[in-house]
Length: 241
Image (cartoon, rainbow, N blue to C red; front, side, top):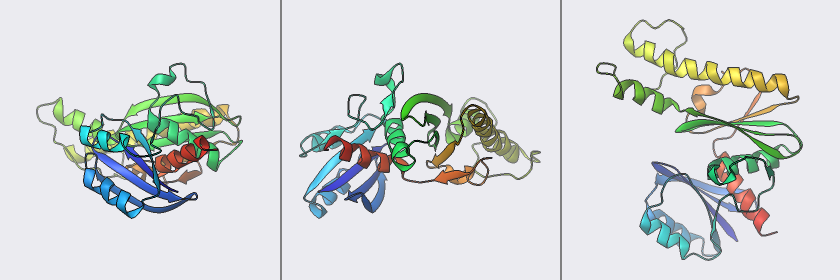
């Protein structure tokens, strides 16, 4: 059976097709693109959909998915391969559940800090006993850039660009330093705190802005651009055992 895993965010839908644990293809489309899902159903008739959604589903997509056989929508009630110690499990993002599932599968019996650099930057921690303890939620790079532009009269909306210097020589570079370099410094400070408390820490980096953080985290890291999709297929396989 093919697993068609959907990671549905605020603006886009990331799709991974897996067979026996192997990724066959990864696609990115608009979150309401029903046609791409219909095409996948035709291409992989013996399938199961696994969905993580951090945004409200388009009604047409929702109706289509609910009619599919063996449909699994990730929630706090799904069987998961780790112990969830979050005090409000019903509020834990489905993508964060998938990230934790991927981490415990890739690095069992190891302290794992997962950094997801998406719309929000999230840090999630699973200890070596397979216990999810929680983490932190930070504004993402685009969100910070848009906030400076939207909440001021004159500051421009600038592109995401890494500046090597700490001193900006224009308004544009000052914003890029204040947002992007500051975000990296912020995450490095958190990584340092985790390293002080937990031995043998594995730092895992993923998300749409991961390239801005690569080679800038002061720790050996494991980078995986499709970690949520990997976690979804792990949860799906865990639920049919």
